[in-house]
Image (cartoon, rainbow, N blue to C red; front, side, top):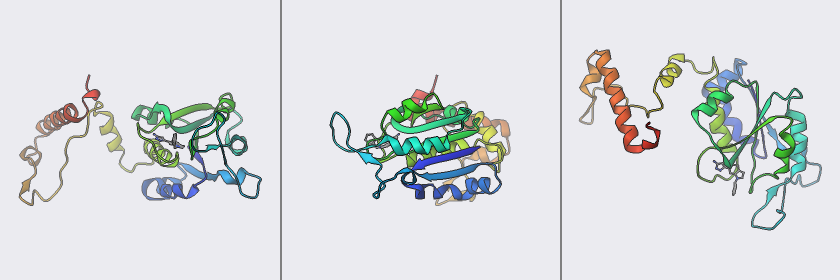
Length: 227
Ligand code: JDQ
């Protein structure tokens, strides 16, 4: 998979060179590229913002640099998915990550200020699949942090990115419940004991206990996830 991110802050994406995603890039399993939007400006001050028509506080990103960047990056065969992090988008879910992990080419359009001129997406919509996606119901300062979270959630589903493929199999069996509590050594730490059932070797009992813990936790903090 190839992933491009258009941004005025390409430094954010240095995080993708670390750990599992860094290894996946070295192994050519994913190719990642942060593109500086200011490279597509032509004035001395590399201007990317302007005031909004209709008034209102704050600035918007002007369309011309976005148009030139997308002219460069969108595949001519229409196979690119253009992802626009936005508080006004559909909610990003694990199912969204699974769907996007099947694609050949993703471009993230990371806005700043109050967002990007709407015509950029109207224009792109017959050259790419355009998806406005929200990371959650809170407001960030720009699209970069949301893009990083989405890229990590998507990339770890690509075969060869996660060392332990068993982790993914287990996740897919968790039925949309929250994780059960986990423990490692020592068996007693600061007078707190690891639950007895996990220390015996009864795997059926352990699976039953973990499922009950998952259901109880989900009921307590995320009842919306239960049927
Ligand atoms: C941008 C902003 C006021 C946008 C500019 C570009 N889930 C999620 N929260 N926030 C974002 C995504 C997000 C994404 C891109 C962004 C926020 N802002 C700031 C400020 C109104 C709209």
